[in-house]
Length: 86
Image 1 (cartoon, helix red, strand yellow):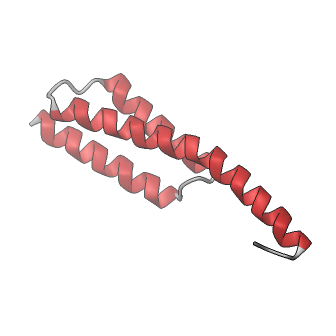
Image 2 (image 1 turned 180 degrees about the vertical axis):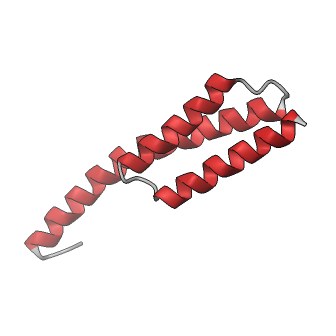
């Protein structure tokens, strides 16, 4: 436990941010998982894919994940979609 006043405040802030970030990170992860299962089952719905991309972009906008991380995930998703279309 911190003894310094500024560090105590920083710990409180970090905990608030961690809880807030969890929702965006979890939503992005769930949307990508749903999109991936839709692709794997052979019913790739455009709305599900768009939702996953949107969730990833929102997480980037909030600073929860890095933009390259989101770009990599979107790329992998689109690559899987293209492979399923063949």
